[in-house]
Length: 208
Length: 329
Image 1 (cartoon, rainbow over the protein chains, first blue to last red):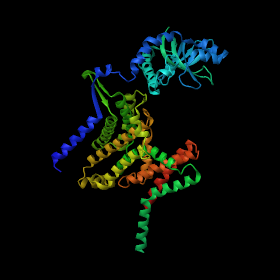
Image 2 (image 1 turned 90 degrees about the vertical axis):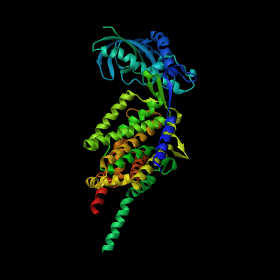
Image 3 (image 1 turned 120 degrees about the vertical axis):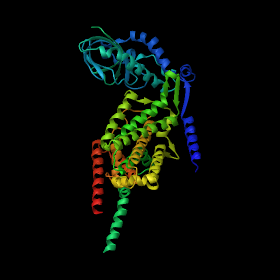
Image 4 (image 1 turned 60 degrees about the vertical axis):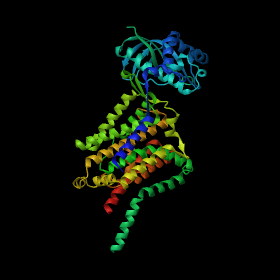
């Protein structure tokens, strides 16, 4: 085959593949165009800035939660916890004072100041799951047509925690520090225990 | 006497050529007797679907081993290319300084991932041939480098929700056969065509048989080796695309120890680790044997710990039989 025809065909194939492989848009147009698509970033930003702060004020103290669950688990879970899915896992927003035991690579080991001190960890590296989304009680299943959108909310919330919340406190923490912390926890209705709680941090302030 | 001897030698050669197939058939017969769930079309397709990724990687590995080399980085290349596919598909590329967003279609993301796999393989080949670094060391280094890049790119988090169109590649079926099986079949056909019908294929065998002789006969050994490692990289990328699609998620720790399964498939398939001898078809048989073995052991409720022991023993047995065959020849 003639060399030029061969190269011509090659260029044609590459052009066809390229045309069907990528599309280029102006970045400013993309940011404006949210029509028909769930804008998870904007939704979560609004949730984080406008709705969540008020919810954090209503977070239950670890003592209150522990006492309530011990006296009447059903009522306590109904009053203080939320979950979008069926099952034994429930999620709560808790606030607590704690002492830092160790600052590890993946978490911060703390002891919660409660009537009976409780060992717990602030998750700082592997922030997964739906703990904050569900614990907030701000999301309703009825408002979303598919689970992909619901999951993307958790994904976005967890990203904010990893990228904004954790860097805001982790480097300044030292063993012995006293902190005030608000975060989301997962509890199992069938196996209730408060030791080794994993807290997804939403707000952490160093007191001393 | 001479006639009897040559007839015996011919029979041994034939037996050797089909030893993987015979082993596979034997294994299937044994598992059919032991488990009533084994022999069904559904389970057969399930085994093939699970084996497809290993077939893709092992096919590339066969080409590398035929040249007398080894590629330990394929598992990490799989993870990196899977992550790249997912990342490009979901987030595209943003160039803020130019106010440009480049979005990728499914085809675009796949081509980009294959290109990345190809380039990493090419780099492996370059390091091995230009700096005389032993393939074991060069690809071991790439194993870590590619895994590190995967972690950096994904920030250690999975990239999920990639869309139905993409998920079809790993989870869909065409004409009743899982799409990954079609893809693996295409990869094998291309590799078989290259090794059996092209000049490159003959060069690969020549280099594996005797690299010095190949060099003196005018073969550009470096170029052939670089192409072979690049092909192995691209095939690992295809494996990565299938895994990512099947899970609808790119996992940063995907593909860990996949290189060992691929090497096992190659060895069980009768390819000599010293190069120059073996076929892609043998590797396919090897990969299916491993898949059937995994499947059978699960159906027989064998503990996962014992499964590893059995798998290792089978690989060892395959190598011993191969070596005994070499001695007789």
